[in-house]
Length: 177
Ligand code: SF4
Ligand code: SF4
Image: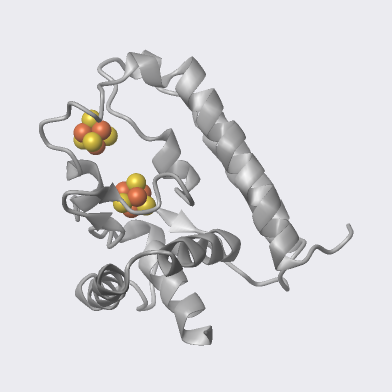
């Protein structure tokens, strides 16, 4: 398959992201609890026993680009949280990273998810609090979207790129800058 530049990949990723987001909003989210009126807003993102969101290299680049647009002091705080979460939750040590959980460094008190509009990962778009299991989006919807993102990554980067926890994926990108 024809290779793509990272810029082309980011454009395609944004299209995948916005299509996925529109589908979740249209077909499922109206049956979930509203995040706007949630009395424990952010509990989902800061629960260190729950979050294990992994992202591809291309998604990490999109997140890093979004963070670059933040005010300097906020960006510094996020980078510090990225470093400390890797240490605290031992996210870059050997072992199954999918078995590890962490509080997400991209959640900012009084703002919320810092990449909500710009680069929110697919599992986070998919997530909401549903009362009835039957109302959840089917698992295949997320896995199909993640497979498309994986294929996109393979058209840009060399083989061997794996999905990583958000802090580890971001640190890899930041250390290359
Ligand atoms: S996903 Fe659930 S816990 Fe998180 S803000 Fe929305 S309603 Fe609250
Ligand atoms: S990326 Fe955003 S929505 Fe996802 S866990 Fe982090 S703060 Fe929450």
